[in-house]
Length: 269
Image (cartoon, rainbow, N blue to C red):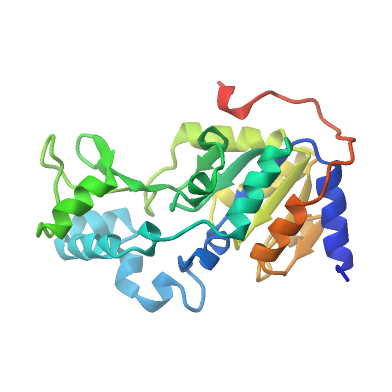
């Protein structure tokens, strides 16, 4: 029998017209991509990998950059496939209720699963592209990784010779202002905020929860461990994300809804 919390979450999803989803690393662990901070997380097992996530350290230490490129070359992201959680959000989108996926993940699995790329906001950037820290030129990550595989320890920018890194947000970097703006609008313009697989320990992503709650949205949090924002949630689920999201996506709409729509988030300006 479903728990009372699961029944309550299903009822909220059934009555929702505009759902915004905030996802974290826990959504991708079933795809073989480890989280960062957990007991088996990448930064827990490898302190140098954690250092490479700092922009200052990355810029200052050539050996750290070379390690980062070796790590990127062997990343499980390149062979990972979307799991049941990613696919469930695609189904929720197709039902007409899911408006926006705001993700802290950099793996691109939401889009690979079939989520409309215009509805996916990658707060922390993407591993699938590179950016030059000198001139700002961007390019496909696969091109840089081919150079590493061919023997370059640290590929530089083809345009200016500057330092390349993945187009992800490192510690010490500002989030993309436009992506953050759209994420905040999505939090304000939803009747349900569904939080999945994130500890809500990193700002400004975590701040979307109180923002949505203050705007009147019902908050559902599904995460293995408690989060600092559980008290704001109408429902808290400590069940596996790969089970909860498919269950919620299967709930048929019941009508209702409390807010007027602001339109397609891909057109917000």
